[in-house]
Image (cartoon, rainbow, N blue to C red; front, side, top):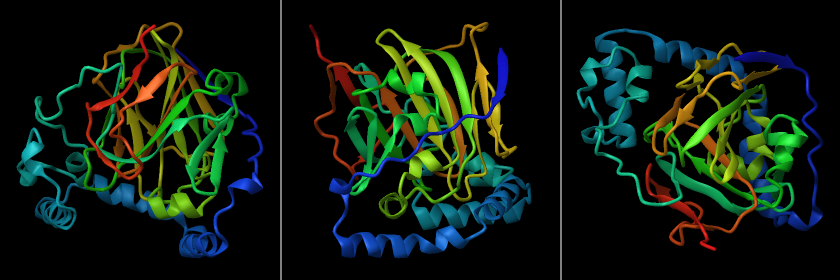
Length: 309
């Protein structure tokens, strides 16, 4: 494994006047997210991460109990449904599910998370649709690597949002061999639907971990996007990637290791909620016809199939 620390320009964000929102809606959304520009997001996130890792006995159990009640967390699906046995909030938040809780569909690509669909569809040249009036480039998303981004020109994407109540481990959409991992420093805006409408280029400006895989259908990217109070992101082959939170892009290459992960196998996790962005190369890919933005999704359900012939 080779670890590289590099300085890389992430490219300009393009503005398309044809994509402007109606003025009143755009102004309203941007005003609602204005406080996020002013808050000390890194300090808040560091504190949340520290608190979530503390082992406070009965106090931790009480905190978990309040969280379960407030967000309606279904603990009957958890491998360990007894909240009193979790030593820290992080242990609870990254809880495993029962082995049969999420059957894997027979599909070329399966949904890698529990959550809700933010957006999905075709990449228009190098532009990914974020929300009405907002797009961002594949090059910016992957940390400025134009050669990597070019592999997904006119390809497909899916942006999937994990709310606080959701299961927060991320699994593989298909079989894949790990090639690279890139930690891109950035902001820590919230990633909820309102913020997606109000912050331009949200998913390509927040801190993120870009995981590059090779599959039988070519390369694909699975990106873990950080957010306010997301204490850290971790992968099964590396462990915790952040913190540390620096200002320089870091990259790991795995040319000398044969890291293979099967469809449905865990590949990483969030410590508190966030978003996953997937990129696939140009192909005759058909998304699940039941998918629509805002629809709830579950790990293992059919996401997409490649056309035969």
